[in-house]
Length: 150
Image (cartoon, rainbow, N blue to C red):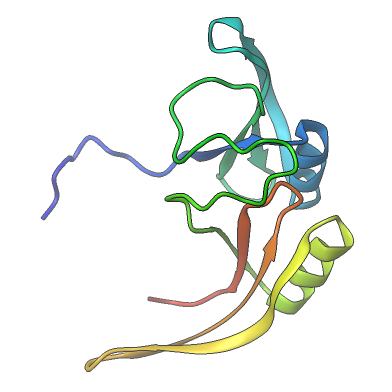
């Protein structure tokens, strides 16, 4: 059931970066470029950027760790382990999940799951997917999914 015909598509996801510069640099290695930057003193936001992937129409918003606006979970303090919240992972379609995994590790990501192949099946259909997962330098989980048709 379609609830809202006004929605035209997905635009961006936003993250709060513990290390703003390092996080921006990491996403630049994933072909994102800064298309706009700003500050909002009324939300204690000193630095924020909108980044666009140079290969496809996808955006990410990266805010500094002092940003004071609605979010999931509690604020993560410096040195705290990653705090689980409603965002499970960020997924990018790739040609080669193993290559994307290796490149992400070389650019500061931490290992989570090397390339694996999984069968997603139900009574009517089986779909085989190949993916890999890393923790970005900021802590969010990034999935690299080889092209698949659902």
